[in-house]
Length: 104
Image (cartoon, rainbow, N blue to C red):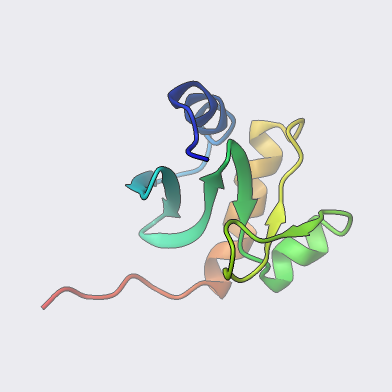
């Protein structure tokens, strides 16, 4: 099921303090980037982030869920996480994520 525009807008509002936040629609869902690094996505209206060491440490109770059948599990971020906490989470994750690929 694709994420509605309203659900995406609500997640993006919660992520408003993340520097250099960009997003890219992909097959009805949305991939999320900070500083060009993919850190998560919005799937079925839910904010999911990659299970990096920092994310696992900061979200110890977060359920591991698959964004779609056959995908690697990600961490489900609670809907009541505030913008400051989310910005801190993404900032902690960035050094552990792959840098953006250079285009030829």
